[in-house]
Length: 437
Ligand SMILES: Cc1cc2nc3c(=O)[nH]c(=O)nc-3n(C[C@@H](O)[C@@H](O)[C@H](O)COP(=O)(O)OP(=O)(O)OC[C@H]3O[C@@H](n4cnc5c(N)ncnc54)[C@H](O)[C@@H]3O)c2cc1C
Image 1 (spheres, protein in one colour):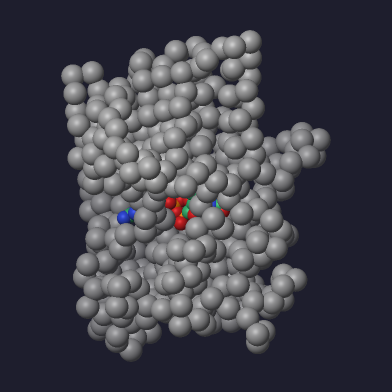
Image 2 (cartoon, helix red, strand yellow; image 1 turned 90 degrees about the horizontal axis):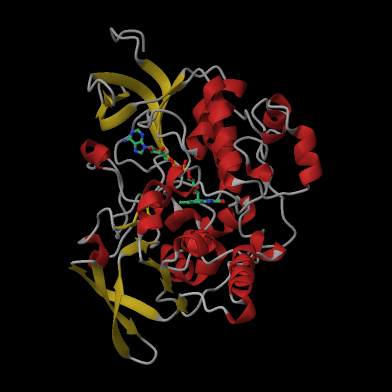
């Protein structure tokens, strides 16, 4: 590759530095000689900053750090982090598997600061494939200075995560008084001034936001409503055999199913990864109980089976048009602030526009992806383009799961290095998925 007159030529470039590409950066730096750089638009590592609410925890055990599940001996394990920041005894006596989200973020930041291959404040604007050089050409912009730069890579790994989603009825009114739950902590002062707040949605984020608002309600005295169009405020599956769906075996089983079967099954598996943790439900219930002691009637309403159909701006907030779909009853509701906890999606990034003609798309305009997380390309080339956390339609519910990140990175690294750097174990769980193993 040295024939290009530039220093910016790499074996691998990672785009985005969330937990998945951070793990890739760490495992590559520790286990290979590959020349890599990981480009991130934010000024430093930050994991869902608007939702780093105190007392919230990871929904997976701490072993789902960025390396342990493939290399527990790594310098970058969570346990080594605790050791290095002098918290090992404190954690030992804490006796908890589910660590605070704020600590997971601090741990990831600690990892990123020690790696030489992470570059922040750099947004990727476009990628092109240079057939002659057999390289990807990546154009970036430096966030602070606006300066453009060009990088080249033999292989690229997309790790750009997800984007907040709002229904059209809410999106039209988005602003300081109506925002996605991803922005929750950034609007805290506004929320504390409000007379009435409505939370919409019933996933984990909605529940965490509602719980936090409920905790502060006695101090700030707002009216608090929580609506969801779901049938109820349901718990996420957390039985041990249910959790085995987040395993390499289930990925392998799911991958081999026909696409039509995958598309039918996935929506039926919502509660494996959506829904609310039983602990958060219990915390909410306990607090409602506490706030109602002695006949107190906190101004709180929880209403399921209720879809928001329209939101109109008024002088003092919003009029929210709702439909209780089971009773088929429409009603109007007033709220000064609305929080849309309506989930995330994985859009195809606009920066790959110039690659659209060489990528193989499926009938639903989604990536076609090999078992090893490589995008299927139309052209025969030496260059590989991988995706992390954009493959639920092909690899199943484990795609966004932090506990499977290290496994997926081991598979990707073995392909990038063209040798087995990190062994991938075939038998991990007790149950068998499918007739043939
Ligand atoms: C609030 C929340 C809590 C969660 N909690 C859990 C949990 O407890 N357990 C679990 O298993 N899963 C959890 N998940 C799901 C899990 O998939 C995500 O937490 C995880 O962040 C995904 O990591 P990622 O690396 O794919 O992407 P992200 O963390 O989203 O990171 C992607 C990064 O790419 C950067 N980027 C995007 N475009 C560009 C560009 N053009 N140029 C440069 N950089 C770019 C972004 O700035 C971002 O930093 C949670 C998800 C959310 C939203």
